[in-house]
View 1: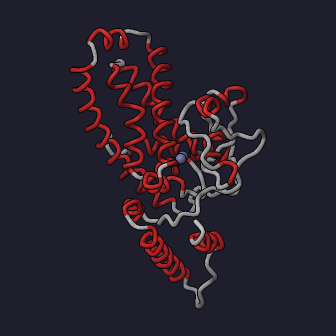
View 2 (view 1 turned 120 degrees about the vertical axis):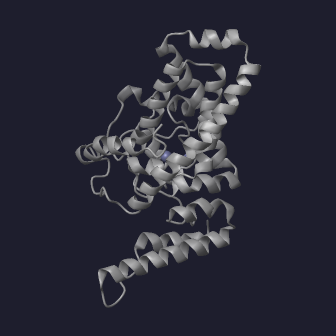
View 3 (view 1 turned 30 degrees about the vertical axis):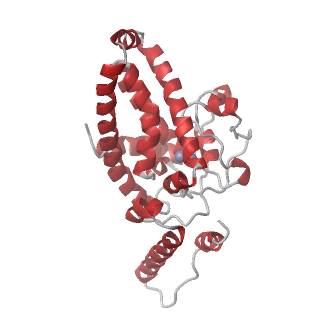
Length: 297
Ligand SMILES: [Zn+2]
Ligand SMILES: [Zn+2]
């Protein structure tokens, strides 16, 4: 197993960097956008931590399922055609994902973990990596543990995991690919970009990972035809550095705000010194807005 995902990173660059140039949803957005380097650190380090956490959980669940799940059930599940097993896993896995994801939005102390992912202000394929490992291990466990417990075959699980992994990059990518009538059935960039929108009407919508149909059935779908989100992100004082993002859910709101402000100011000073200018420019408008909003968040 490639624990850090270096090979996947190279393949993802070859696929998504040209795609985001050719059919961009937001053509003005740069490849090396703000916090690109930090999200690259997230990709490698989170990739390792999430795989490690899931491997430990899966080993435990498979051992327990061997005792608890009748062998006949596991054998008949694994004996089905691969395409049918993958379809069943998509449905079972996404019901688990929907429930866990919605809980991470609804429960305040869980939201502090998930806020890291929603702090993205320029969405692209790499933004999929900006997550807190505890958030991702929990939501992925909700998807994957029932699948491993039911005894799906190894080949079918490998097909499903490949689909799951690459589809996560695709739905975050800055591409203008629309799925036509399939937009209600399969999660697209259009569907998931609305989940990250800072538009009040789009908040707490589109929780599914793969099946927008779940949101349609449960009244949480938001996908206005012919429109795209303009602003992404949230008003929470989420820090911009990986190490501070790991600590953020465990800090009190006031501490997190101070740490985020200090880190932002340090980065701002470093940028200013690098530029070699004699007087500091005014701070970026978006950052100022974000800190003005803290008092009301
Ligand atoms: Zn979310
Ligand atoms: Zn996302």
